[in-house]
Picture 1 (cartoon, rainbow, N blue to C red):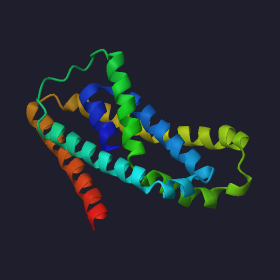
Picture 2 (cartoon, helix red, strand yellow):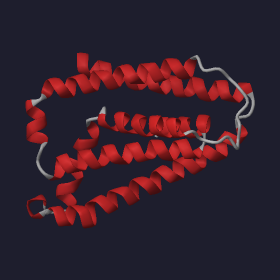
Picture 3 (cartoon, rainbow, N blue to C red):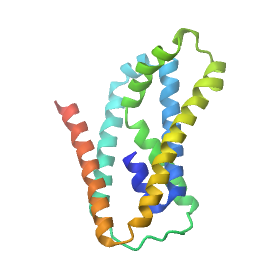
Picture 4 (cartoon, rainbow, N blue to C red):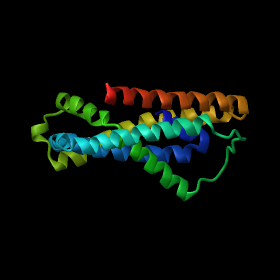
Length: 185
């Protein structure tokens, strides 16, 4: 959600929604893994998940460095979004979600409480689980995007931008440090 807010503040709500689409796609992939029991396969591919985790950690450090060293400029409140930026935002959302294996853990913990995984079919997945997941993520993400769009209007000064970017950078570095300490420790 930090990336969603930062993207919306820096590039506008269109870019924020593109990032949210990527997040939703990543969640749907993990939802399918959880529903169809592919976690057993994931356990056999520890190296792949380790690479994904470390890639996500490096990406978080890159985002932290980027936010810490960001140029402060006047925010264009009515700037047009370019298709290239939308694709980039969507892919960022997808990579952030896929780099976070805690998402599948969430689904593995929640789904057995809500439904009987033995009886889930492709039809119930497509007609109930996928739309519910999209609706929930879209609702929560939209609240963050709308709030960030409001904040964006107040961040027209360089001082306010510096505080916001340094806060986002610190959050990214903290997340990367936490991930690293869990992997090393």
